[in-house]
Picture (cartoon, helix red, strand yellow):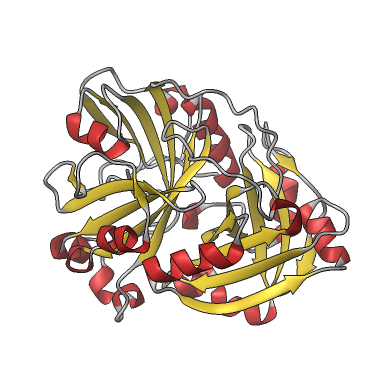
Length: 365
């Protein structure tokens, strides 16, 4: 649930300490605004924001057809990669063989990748309580419901009921679903007043577009630890924390009963892009035991940086971070895969050449 802030200016602090990271007191629903104006643009380490969502799949053709039906995102390229030393280095394997298809959303890219080793592998549905990167979010105007589009494309709705849930009466409805391979996704429908408040009416996002990507959602067994990791990584304060308990509408969205959830948010631009972090206290989020790598089925995400060597040097100083190889030039970018303190896989990219047209500096303008 990407809960939109109605008030964008409360307090300002770049000092991240134990008071900042403390949990809010227990209640049915508590929201604590930590630094609502802090965004990734304040990062002193050259982080520019989220550039792409990567989804490793077992059947590229079927998954591409599903996401094209559901999103209408433009297919901008397909590629087959074999016998490529740069790919071997990037994906931390020998004799890497893959096919990929890249869909262009108005503000990010959705990259579907089929590694030869994963073709035909069985998949299972991601539990809402994780652990790991559980979902990304597709936002639409309420007049062009993304919920309806995903239902018609064949998504399996996880939320309770037969329509998206109005969580708080502030002009946004929510629902969770699974794609054909069990990857979880979120659908948010935004009323015109919300779009205007967020500045979308003056943004290329709504220049004839009816759907866009919004967030990276990670679920951890230890929210405080993961929030400290990303605060150290980005060098910015989290914007907000929340505790949700005894909220029947939130239960309906998550398809649960009596859920108890802790959440935290980092702003990846000044509109909708966020890194949202969750911990389910009930049902309890377990530690990640799956040793994920860049070829694992499911989600990973891209963080764009201005200087990849500088970013890697910084990462090596962040407790719990792992850089999996040396950066390598790969098509339109220089890239390297990394892991966070929980074991989630993410990719750092420095856009080069023709790739600069896909930079967050362009897509988020």
